[in-house]
Each structure stands twice: as structure tokens, then as C-alpha cells.
Length: 83
Length: 451
Image 1 (cartoon, rainbow over the protein chains, first blue to last red):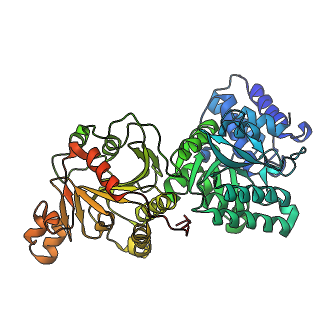
Image 2 (tube, rainbow over the protein chains, first blue to last red; image 1 turned 180 degrees about the horizontal axis):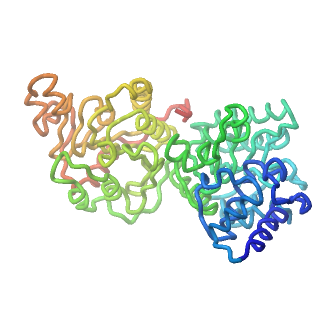
Image 3 (tube, chains in turn red, purple; image 1 turned 120 degrees about the vertical axis):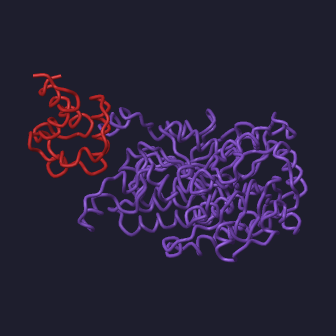
């Protein structure tokens, strides 16, 4: 899975499962401030990421992972992206 | 399908009608106050569980995240009123963001009325809550008013105030799991009595619980005169060595019937429901494997609530005692040990159902609050019943009166009624409960309020 594949899937979750407009999803978009997820959406978002990417992490592991770009890097480490 | 529904299904969650369907026997559900638009966010009605009529309502998380407004509140009130008249147990499937803020004070009043009606039903009909998703504010208090709470450990959350507001008010970022996750409530607060790892199992657990409440009897193929050889095998030869009381409980009750409550909370006291000769009973048992089975604030509170539950719903209580006393310490005393211990004493003293205690190995000091409420008190032969534990007694008094040291001394003093052999535990208990007869039920329902 390439970095672009990871990014595309993250975007798909945000649009399909959380009704976020594709246009506002930029790399530096903050999940809560920009994309409008609240703390409970974030719980579901994490569960969907873990389900779709096949990994498990403690809630504390996501500390500071608040933008699309940071999340893609976080997932790259977990699922081992290829170039 | 909306994005929220899609997400819900992708995470393995059931839609509200699927939850109701799972709860009740097939095709038995009759809805109350059905609305075609479903905009009140509540499904309510009656159905059958193992053939018995039960009322239930479920918040619909797809409608404003299950937040409750005036019309939803009125629907629940109507259901609870019918449940009171028909004396049917009530199951609540919680998944609610709390009050509908946009409906303002009227919605707040509706929620307050639901909570008050829930409290009024306490002790009158069994109330089982299943926390499947969010349980915020009023809904969280609704869960705390239940007799028994089942929690979905990967999706259930109960808190008075959610993470965002908590962060605004306290200035600290908080993780939702720490704030109110079901595992936290199962281990730290004791709010959640039974946990399950998915929604279907959570709902099944509620069905299983109602098989014990109120007291009822089922067909039993485990003979009451079964020799309980496993008990002696489970007890260590050294009196100071810890052991796990679970196998002893399992050996005593009808095979496979023990349903532990609050198993992850205050592990030094094991509590739960079981059957003896097919009849529902409550169990409290010292657990020497954890903190030597000592009574502390949490264990006292846990035990008191179980006694209160059994008293409300007519279940006789068996208390298995192996207790070194109350836990000494500044933390305990400042934590309200007196008040929590008093809850246990009070609950036993006010209990309306037959009480039998069985001393397995020892009773020291204040730990006698577990043994002495027994209207019949049995003991195994090596029992020690002392006003103070050996080492502490020697430190205080210099030497221990021979009465306290002697095995069976308490029996000689008339404090214990009978010494029995572990192998004969089942028939002895059956005889004891038979002698004590039916619960002493008066017209006044005692309630089963939160402790």
C-alpha cells in the first residue's frame, strides 16, 4: 500500500462514513476544527481506521495526530507503506 | 443508507430495531407509541423473553444521536407506567447523547420525569440497562438507576459530561475511554455489572439476567444431594494460603448457573446470581485471592447493593465467608469505610429474604458483618471465629483467649449453628433454605437505589 493509497482511503472514510465534503479535506485539515468531527466521531473514526487498515493501537498512541497529513504518516508506520 | 448508518453497520453495530429484535423472543414485540417518522428517537414496547413479558425501550442513535426530547420522553413515561401496572421487568437499550438541547427546558423536564419514573419503579420490577453506545448526562444517570447494567466494552460510554466540555471546563484533554468507557466503569466505579464484547452478546446477557429476576425456579437436573468433593480439593491445607473462591461457588450451585456481577470491581468480594435446586439465589463470597478477601470501601458497597437487589426481588442469599476483617488504614477511614460498611450492615439487617452464611475458613473482627446476618450459620470443621485476627490479637492482648483459637469455639458459644462437611454442602444448604422458607415480603417495596 502506497502513501497515496493510504491517503485515498482516509479520505474515503471521511466522505462516505462522516459526510465530510471532499473539497475541505486538505493535508493540513484538522479533524475537529476543519472537518467538524467531534470527540465521539473521532472514536468511530479510529475504530474504522483500525478495522480497514488491520492494526490495533491504544487511544494514547493517537495523541497529537490531529490532521490528515499526520494521520497518513501515523498509518504509514503502522501498515508499512511502500514507495 | 445515511453515512451514520453506514458507519454504524461497518463497525458491527446493530440498528435500533435489530437490537429490539435481538432482545425479544421471535415475533413477540408489540410497539407502543410508534411514530412513522421515528423522529422522537425512541422505540418502545413489550415483548417476551423466555416466555415472560418484558417492557423495553431503546434510544435510536441514528436520530440526533439518540438525544431525548419531549415526545421521546412522553413515550418512555407511558411505557414505564404500563410496566408498573403490569409489573413487568424493564430493559433499556442505552445509546443516547442526553437531552435534546434545542428543545430546552421542556426536554430537560421530560428527562427528569423519566429518571423519576425509573427511580419509582426501583424494587417494584427488575430494571436492566444495556449500554451499547453513548450514555451522556441524563442517560448516564438513567443507567446508574438500573438494578443491573450490562456494558458493551468496545462501544459503550457513560459520563455526566463529555470529553469536549470536560476539556473546556478543566483545560485538560481527556481520553473518552478514561472518562467513561465501559471497561473503566467495570473496574473502577462498579457501575457496569456485566461486560460483553459485542452488541449481540450484551443484549443476550440482559436476557440471561432476567432469567434470575425476580426470583423464579427453572427445571434443574443437578441433584441437591450431589457430593461437593471439589470444595475440599479447592481449599489449601495451609490456612494462610490464598485460594480462588470461584471453583467453590461453582461446585455449590447448580452446574453452570453462576452469573457473576461486577467481576472486575472490588475483586476481594465475589457477588452474583445463581441457582440452587433450580431456584434463583444471590451469592456473596469472600475472595481470598484478592487482598485476602478483606472488606474495604468498594467491597462493602458492592456487597450491600447485591443484598439490596436480592431483598427487592425475593432472592434468598448465600454468603460464603473467609474474611480477615475490615481493611485498616487512613485511606480507608477517610474514604468513608464507616459509611460504606454501614451500607452492608444496613442492607443485611433490612433484607427480607432468607439468609444463610457458610464460614469456609475464618471470620476475624468486623468481618463478622458477613457471617452474623445469616439466619442460619453453617461452618466447615476447621473454622476460626475470632474477635481479632491472630497476630493483631496477640499484639493487643499479649495472648489469645483459648476460646478464640479453638476451632469450633464459635459453634460452642452458640454463634454458629452447625458444622458441616464440605462434601455435604449442597444438601445442607438446601435444608437450611428450606427451613427458612419463603421471603418475608411486606407491601412496602424497599427499592434498590444506587449506593
